[in-house]
Amino acid sequence: MKIVDENAAVYACMAVSVDGIHFVKPDLGLVDYHGSKHNNIIWTTPKLDNFTPFKDTNPNCPPDELYKAMSAGWRAARALRPQVS
Image 1 (cartoon, one colour):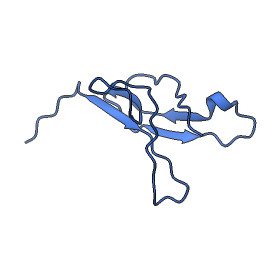
Image 2 (cartoon, rainbow, N blue to C red):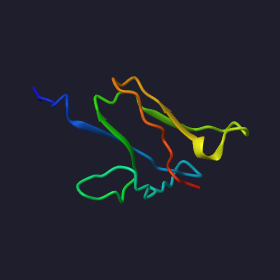
Image 3 (spheres, rainbow, N blue to C red):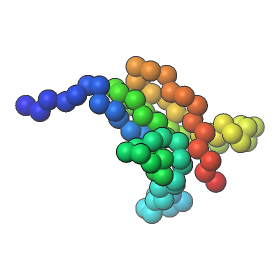
Image 4 (cartoon, rainbow, N blue to C red):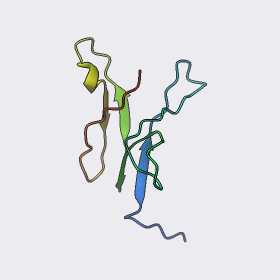
């Protein structure tokens, strides 16, 4: 039996693709990981569950609110504002 630390951090990361085959992991600079923010991590918390980020395709969506997410985790996510074009 494997014992899992329920308070261990879980990381949600972002990768983008135009063809669904080749992906790019953007350097978002949002979350510190081992002393560096040069990574594609968009959010971290213990007990993160069913985290689903998405891009809002509504033409009336403000540019700084394009990236959103839903989660069944125990904490509410902060706003996702990666500067990705």
